[in-house]
Length: 89
Image (cartoon, rainbow, N blue to C red; front, side, top):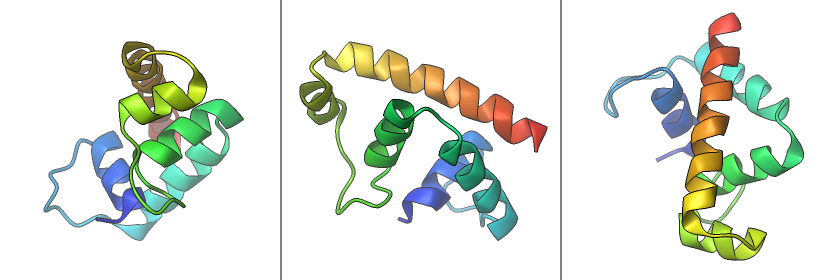
């Protein structure tokens, strides 16, 4: 599945089989682009955007030098930020 589509569905609380309008994907792209670089990297790698695959929490933790739980908490915080920003657009 397309990473942008999957991320958009998550942020808009949509079902996996629900079609996603291109304007929603564009809003998500703009909001992600405004994230701090470290946060953007986590989201892009977790959803495989611009990557050859999706990264696991363990892989990101090893890359960052922390543990999976820390990455999961950071990811949850990033999602809250993204959801607030998407609602404003």
